[in-house]
Image (cartoon, rainbow, N blue to C red; front, side, top):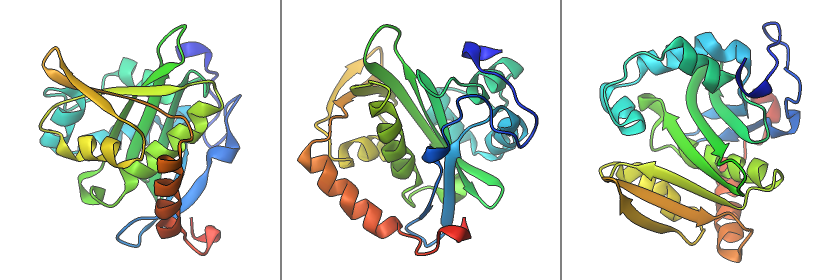
Length: 208
């Protein structure tokens, strides 16, 4: 069992599951998505999600050819402690269409973040939605900054980071772009978040 997480029967929330991180939102295309923390019983959905991704999307996330998640990866990705390690999934109906996660760097207030979105749902704001929700969750766990390594050709992810409203620093490190930014509640982020939230309003939370 990874990181002290306790597996639960299918459909049952595991210990420490943060119910208050569940929400519904509308994408730029008008699709209602539900965001919630990942659970151990999401293993099959995560495998299906990954297998449906294009080779290019997988390459941008894993920096190489990686068509199938290993059993160890599935366990690690779905079993988190909801504090130092958290993953959020975006769902359309029962279909997983996006995953965002942070992993705190041990004994620091910094966490590494990563995102991946189904090809059919890219450029609709799902990655930014997951990022905003990770910021909210990470702050209450004492995380003060995010960092991410991404390929220079992953312009969509770089644009996501630079559009959030935080002061972003980036540098080339070992052949990739390392992005780092504090997640303090600065006015520029609060203003950008308010604009995004206005666009995300579903008007009907029961539709999730």
